[in-house]
Length: 219
Image (tube, rainbow, N blue to C red; front, top):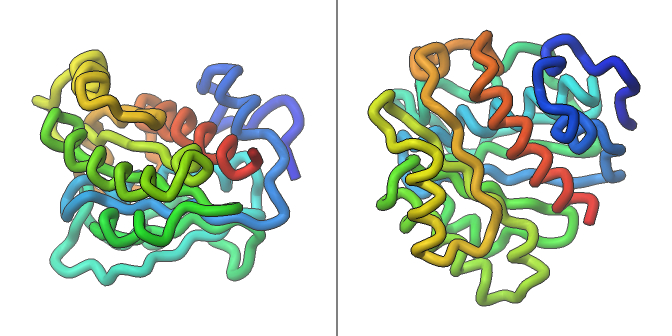
């Protein structure tokens, strides 16, 4: 299933290359596991953004579920991911986005794999990238095929976060061997607002992140 031009209005502001990538046909089955390197790094937000982009591009074809109980909030803006997304989540779907909470180190031991992608979420600073790199290394020891199914999302959880270039430089210094997408700070998201929300910047980052995940799923 894929959308035809024009794209859904909520995605119309995204670059054409991203629209083409997220609009490609979905696989018959697949899973996107979103896991953070710790609590409060934005895992719920990233899972919600990925689901939002896919659900807008492929209505009714993408599920969303969460595995880790949220105690006292968590992630950028807190809240349970299904409660934060703007749209109806189907009970069954060929592709499912999984919010795995702050368990990147554990999830990396079993994900990714065939038809499964792992999105490692960290804070958008050098220490966060280092944490993500350690999780990625756990996948890398299993071989290049699994490593090709990993993406890192670095989330700016405060307005004082380093710029995209600084984060990318930190990843280069560490030799991060997988795609890196920086999700910019958004007051709407930090307040726990509905996803994807009115701010186009994090939605655009979510679109780029989703395009990497979908490319890995269908490769």
